[in-house]
Length: 548
Image (cartoon, rainbow, N blue to C red; front, side, top):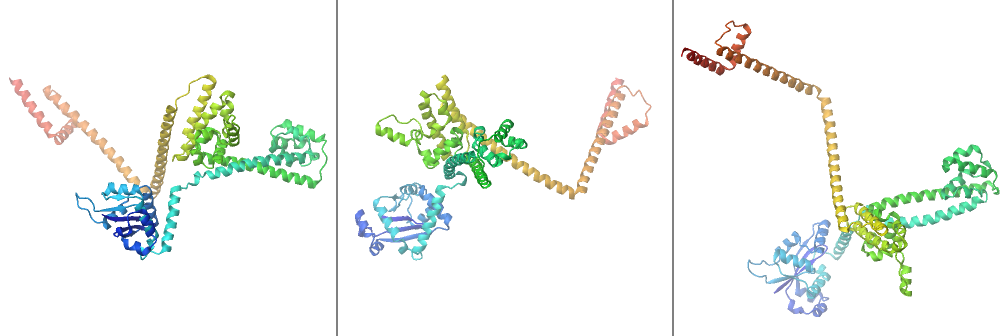
């Protein structure tokens, strides 16, 4: 039975016919010893067909299909053209060697071509990869290397699916910088307190906040210059008029020593630096909140921005956090205590970074371990939803937070919480309704924009064709008037007919015709002659009945 080898390269599909397979031998060791010799291998294996890829995009699509075990239409056409045809109802007298078993099974299911993938075939395909540039004349080794490099980059980029808005590395760097800024701002503010305390020591007892102290140090500079005129400005800075008066009074009776103008300028500049650092810290915190809401909205709504960011940074990435089980996530950040407990055979820690959450602080001492275990379970669920779901919404995080609140009430008051299945069903329903409402809003926005554009066009047309628009309005009014006149005529014609019928029945008592009646009768006879003839027939019948 003949053996064909299907080889997928970065430049295209190649099909080889292993006709001299008996010369090489059937064992894998024999193949390994002979594949390095090009002369001997080229006698046993020859190129049967080659089709290049049309573009880099086509090569990427074919590579993705092969990696997923799918046979594309191009590969099917290539195999049908280059393989010998099989008659209906008969088995094929050849087999195709494939590197990927999934691709081979899909080919046999779709086309009926027998495929195999074993160690022997894989050794032959490795030899084909080694000597591919020698089999194809127009293919240079440099071109093949460039194709492999470009396809490798595009394939890895497509697999990673890089999204700028969901980069967890920014969160890791931001939380590290936030921690260092907290330490730096605290140390610098203490330095400002010590430095300016030589000049105005009473200010430390009046103002406790570091940021306000730096503001006041920059504003006051020299305590001897303070007076009652500066009380409104001080009250605006602090937000309390009583404290402003207290500062002015303390400055008058201060025990601090005087400083030179150069020293005061340096203190003022350093206070400004501390203020700038604290303001930058606030901006960085806002940036971290927005990034956490974009990257991990469910984890953020469940446990908060700071604790969630610390968990992500400690795990290394959101995907690593999603891969962690709940037991690992529970003690994440307490590795030293864990290994110490394992070494000394003591009690293992109950919580790590999760301890900074408000839920564990609200729980009683005997329930802190239970609460940490339950919270770690919900955090692992939220991180997996954030990592692997395409839809970014915080519905599941809010529902998980409600579950944690119910569990707290259960531990404290004994109120039974809801089941996890019911909560998740409610979250899915809310998510579906929200997506539907968002789609409806988008449609409405699109309709309103279309209507606005139509109105603008109609206004522009109306300004240009004002006379043309007036004419049809007049004609419409005229038509309405004519319709009303016709209706009036019909009513007038029906009234005299009824009068004639009544007159005929009574024996024509009133024989004094008027001009209006004559006109009406003439009009009635001209408009509806059938009714007039019917009236005459009825007159004759009435006369005959009277004679009898």
